[in-house]
Length: 204
Image: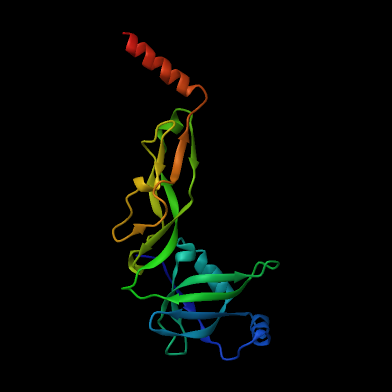
């Protein structure tokens, strides 16, 4: 099951920069929640709660389950759609939350997790990761925390492209299929040795 985090929010009544400054002085951060069939609502939350939520394995794709004294907010399941960060203090100053509909497809960026040790690495090659994440489309409950790429059979000079991957059921990869995900760079002299072996075999 996808990571879900209970997240406390309260409705934000006052608007304007002055009100936002007072909220931050009180240790709270403003935000907005919106989504299909839901009228946008301004909310407030504790920054440290969002930091903890984003520290889970799902990172930016964590599902937040709102807990609030406001009945229209309590129980909503959302995802972080956008974050504004203070360029100097590196603190969150505003967040956009998107209300999830289990029957509507969402787009998200998920990390690539490499699995196994490539044959090429054992022969002295170097595994290079070309893409650390991929764009996907799926319904919320099908959203994977990562796309796993098994590199065990990669030989020196071989690569895995986006189009080679088999995504989990219900998930469609949006990233260009021609792009490389990872490649094993052959060790120095490997190509020459391989060509020499081929010539010897042909001469027999």
